[in-house]
Amino acid sequence: MGGGAGNASAHLPVMFAEVMDGLAVKGDGRYLDGTFGRGGHARGVLQRLGPQGCLLVMDKDPEAIEEARRLAAADARLRWRQGSFATLAAWEDTAPGLDGVLFDLGVSSPQLDVAERGFSFTRDGPLDMRMDPGAGESAADWLARASEAEIADVLWRYGEERHSRRIARAIVAQRRQAPLLRTAQLASVIASVLPRGDGRIHPATRSFQAIRIHINRELADLEVGLTAAVDRLKPGGRLVVISFHSLEDRIVKQFMVAQAKAPPVRRRLPDAVPFVPRLRLVGGAQKASEAELAANPRARSAVLRVAEKLEVAA
Image: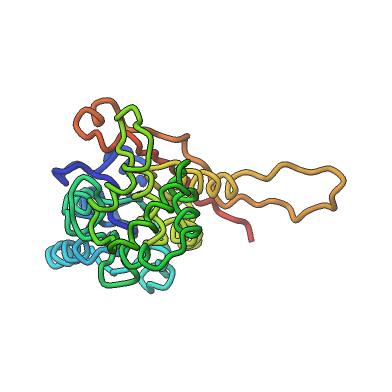
């Protein structure tokens, strides 16, 4: 993913101080930033690492990886790999174990702010939405072939859009007239069939979120990536995750709780295998400070969670 919804200046990554506190960076540690973006959090980790430390960074986005490549050329402690953090266990550099893992989910400001990437309904551009424009199917291609029922299901499941069926019907009717190739086209079709709201959020917000999540397999990648991160963490290592909507945060919260707390005991069932926690929750859900929100309104929906890997007795 692209490093979360950082602010447009790209100098203030979301919840920077809270992320650094959560990672508790050790000078000689080995860390993974699975969502490099433009490197705001990564630079903070590098500032705290000593000469023996190592920072591994990943991102699907080739533009983010180009920035990581430049940073690595100037700092031998940084290594990069293009790809989803769901594949982190396949990267041999993670095999020695990690002292901390950061996932800053969602779309980065550079992705939102560049119309050609096709993520934004406020800037007209090609209807793409892929984190990696060189891989997979674009939003335009998917909307051209998906059935009305499939489109409605995606809008409901990933956007929690109450009018998913009405929107899907309008998309299918529109594509019979002309293909949907631009973000402004899609936003207009969605707005044309929705009741007027209170004006606080654009009527296309939920649908664009849903299509983007589907195109990039974001929630499936998150579930795989969380498990891989805990597997690679050393005892005492920290997992830090920033989410930007309730679907992501629910997955992160449920995963961390399931790894940290025994499930409730059900009577009249045979004795289960004793529960052995793998994680310790570090505090609760954290939100951005009022000062940060004043400087960066995109941080308003950010939720940060931290967990620490436990030593498991053999």
